[in-house]
Image (cartoon, rainbow, N blue to C red; front, side, top):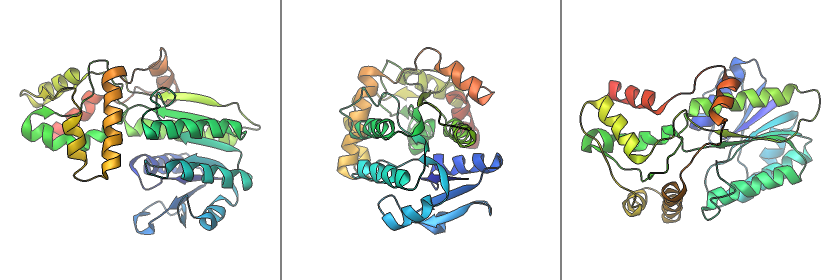
Length: 289
């Protein structure tokens, strides 16, 4: 049977496809823009999106397992529920869903609440599912690397509680492992939730210190006030999304994104290797700068 991957042209989805192909899986992708669909020849491409019922029905034909990734959007919840309904209608039984850590706690942040709602629907609809809950993506830092390199400031307001930033490569590999595990299972497996975290829980000051070390010059933490963060995002994102990101940053400051006991060990066991660290990421950026 075939594994369907949504969000396949994004930074996580593309790597999920690569990991699945590497493991010999039959893969189909649903993509909005086929010009971005540069996948191995064995990957079947269906054009459409999560609100296009006809393309969804085409994409789900002959599929047994779904990787559901839908990005932050004003209609994100509608997209998720339609996809889940068409999946069930098409006989899909097995799902790996990319949610977010603390989705059940950060309920004032819209996309956290949306993802928690989708988690509940997956459970209520009777899917055999793995819920993946990643923390803040290390790869998000690519958007602010110029501020760090050129101005000596780490501008993300992540606070002093700590955030266990996770590398997209680790997210994608765990997703692929879980997709194949469910795809190959002889029967229905129980729902499992896996927190996807990095090996270190870092504060804003910790991250600034890492950058100072790898660059060999001072980098200051910009502080906990998210006002400037929101204003900067509003220059290139819709204002509602910039505000939503501000709400998320406020929860970083008030609560952090802290793993549960055993999360790092569990991921290391699943992957059979150490997790990618923030220091390694910063070193790669500094070396290539």
